Structure formats: C-alpha cells, structure tokens
Length: 349
Image (cartoon, rainbow, N blue to C red):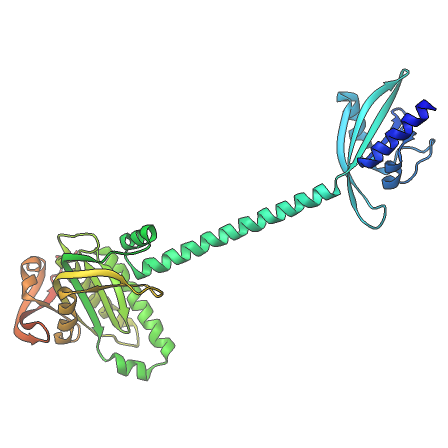
C-alpha cells in the first residue's frame, strides 16, 4: 500500500508539472512503463509495443548518442487534439538489474516556443523599424543639408537653434536667366522643371568645386556665396570662377540642346548675415550689403555676361579679363563703379 501510495503521489506530481515519463528497454525499445501525460501526448502504448514514432524517427541518432555519452535530447511536434504541440524529449541510459533501460522524459514547451517566436518576431520588427528610422534620419539629414551648410546643420542638430552670424568678408553670386517668363509660357511646366533641375545640379557641382555654397534658388535665380560659414581669403576669386564656369557650361549645353539658356550674373563683396529663418519651415538665408550688391548688379549685366563692382578688381585682375563700364546709380547703394568680368583662357582654375 505504501509503495502504491507513493507511486500515486509521484504520478500526480508529474502530471501537475506537465512532464511525461516512459521507460523502454534499450535492446528492443519496448515499453516497460509510461505515465498519463506521456499517453495523453503520444497515445497509450502496450507493454509489447515498440517505442513510438518520435523515437523511431531518431532511432539511429539517439542510439548512437546513448551508447556514446548516455544521453540524447531533441524536440518533436505532435498533434493529439487538432492542436500541434512542441515536446522536448530527453533520453537517458540507465541500468536496472543488469538490463539496459532508456528513461524518456518529455515536456510540453509549446508555449515557450510560441513566446520565443513572438520575441523573435518583435525583435525583427524592432530591427526593421530601426533600419527604417535610420534611413529616414539620413533622408532628413540630406534634405537639411540641401537647405543649409553642414556647419550650420551641425549647430542646429546640437543646440536646436542657429545663432545669426555676421560675416564681414564674403562674396556673393546672383544669377538670373534671360527671358525665363517667356520660356515658361512656351513650354510645359515639367519641361521647365527638368531643364532647371539639370542646370542647377551642374551649378551645384561647379560651386562645390570652387569652394562656394549654394544658398538657395528662387524660381530661375541662383544665389551662392563664398567665405561663409567658413572664412575663405580668396572668396572673391571663388565666386568669379563659378560665374565664368556657369556661363561656359551654358554655352556648351546650348550647342547640343534645343532650348537655349542665357544668364546674367552679378557679383558682390562685403558683409553678410547668415541664419536659419522660420520655425516650422526652415530656410537658411543670407542678408546684407554683399547680397544686395550682387542682386542689384545682375540687372546691369548683358546676357551671358558678369558684372561686379570695381572694389573687387584688386582680387580678380590677375586671373580675369576686366573691362570698366563706368559708374551707375544703384538703388539703395548710390553711384557704384562697375566692371565686366571674363575668364582668361588658361588662368581660370
């Protein structure tokens, strides 16, 4: 009675913790014992029945492991009641009265595997979202770098604001296309946009080559500066080189394109203030005497010509062909001595 009672208690304990147990003879793999949990998952075997399919499927591998190290572990999937269960199986070698036995311990780990799959799925989702956030961050950074110089962007990213800065020695280039209004009226908007995009992209490359920073485009106007936000002692030469190369690019482009573009360019030199304007829509912009000068002087330039104040002559005369065109009354600036600038073959970088 005592042995039966203890056996009953152990059976209840094994059932309560969800462990299935069976004992089989090693030689013929026939069952000696199994508990209720084992029978519930795998069906009720008879004493003369060979070990079930879950051992049969791994017979060779399991036998080799038991003979080698005395232990083998694996997982099997069963479907006792239309629901698939994942069962971990542990086989251990034992000897009872001189006969080799295999102790089979089984545990339902379905919930554990489901949780692992949920964790893996969540981890994959987090990883995908992280990659997407990184890509979005790169897109935003690229967009902001198109709106402002990198040093200004770094200041904004670090502090959340951009302090207006006065730059006392900068040079500015303002370009405007001749007959742009008529061009837009004659052509489809997509054609106009495509042409401008090609041209301004080329201008951006030229600006970068000569150390200039494109600040903005307004319609057909293109504004670039040199000497800000990083100081540059040769800022006047930089914008003049850009201006000459802009016109050369348009001349070459006009030779192979049906639409002919002509531009006027004004240069200015002096002080300027740079800062981010706006709170919800960020725009980096520049203001001041140098900007006003370039904006006013491009009106005085002939098509495919560059006009600058003679105050820039000292910085440019060694590299460019300069022609004085006399004093002109400039709105807001008074009388200003002006000059035309052309590139000298072999001297322009």
